[in-house]
Image (cartoon, rainbow, N blue to C red; front, top):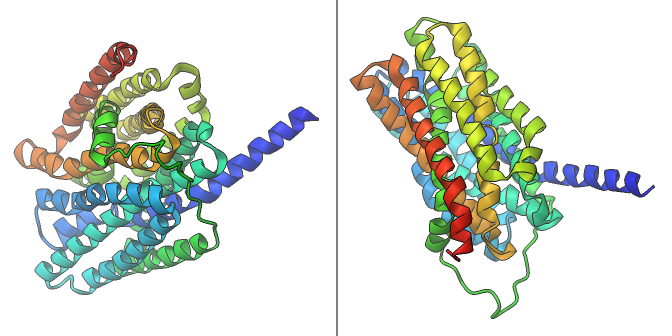
Length: 404
C-alpha cells in the first residue's frame, strides 16, 4: 500500500510540474512559430542580407539578457506569477507588431524596424518566462525535484519549438505571416488567462539570516556552468536560426522536418535519460552530451545530403537535450531556496548570450566563407565547450574543498 501511495504521489507531483511548465510551452510556441519563417522573410521578402537577418533574429536575446535579471529579482521578491503575467503581455504585443510587419512588407524599411521592435519585445517575453515556471514549480513541489522540473521545462520549450516551427511554415505557406501573428496573440491571451487561475507562491524569508547577494555575484558564481551551456547553445542556435537558409542553399525541401527531428530527439533525451543527472552528476552528463552534440554537428558539416542532415540534426538534438538541466542542477545547488529564482535566471543568461551572438556570428561566417561552413564552425565551438566541461570535472571538486 505504501508503494502505491508513493507512486500516486509521484504522479501527482509530475502533474503539478506539468501545470507550471505549460506556460513555458505556450511561450516557446510563440517564439517557435516565426523561427523558420523570418530568415526567409527578411532575405527574400524584404531583400536584406543573411547577416542582417541573423542580427534581426538575434536581437531578441539582447532584451532577454536584460530582463532575465529583472525577472529573477521579481520572482524572489513577489513570486513568479507577476513575471508570467508580464511575459504573456509581451507575447501579445509581439503578435500585434508581427501583424503590422506583414502589413508593411511592401515598405521594407518600415517593416524591418517594426520587426526589430517585435523581436526586442519577444526577448522581454522570453526573459520573464525563462525562470518563472521553473521557480513556481520548485516553490510548490520542493527543490529536490529541481532536475525533474528543469528537464520537464526543457521538454516543454523544445517540444513547443518542434510544434511551432513546422506549424509556422505551414501557416505561412497557406495564409502568410499575418496568420502566425494572430496565433501568437491568441496564445499570449490564453497564457495570461491560465496564470490568473493559479495561486502565487512567495517563499518566506527569515530576516537577518539570509545575506543579500547581488545578481552580479550570482551571475559570477554560476558562470563556470554557464560558459559550458553557452558553447553548447551555438549548435542549437545554428540549426534553429539558419537551417532554412542552409536547405535553401542546397535546394533541399523539408527544412521544417529537420527542425522537428532535432526537437523530437531532444525531447526523447529528456524523457528517457534525465535520471542520469542524479545518478552520475551534472558535469559528467554534460560531457557525454557535448560529445554527442559535437558528432552530430560534424556530420552536418561534412556530408552534404538531406538524409545525413536529418541524422546529424537528430544526434545534435539528442546531445543538446540534457546540457541545460545537467549544468543547471549543479548551478542551483550553490544557492539557498530564497535565491533559486536569481540562480536560474543568471544561469539562463548564458543560453541567451549564446543564441544572441549566434545570429550575427553565423551570419558573418556565411558572408565571409559561405553557408556550407556554418556547421563546421559550430562543431569547433561545441568542442571547446566539451574541453571546458572536462576541465570543470577535474577542477571544481578541488575548488569546493578549498571553499571557493
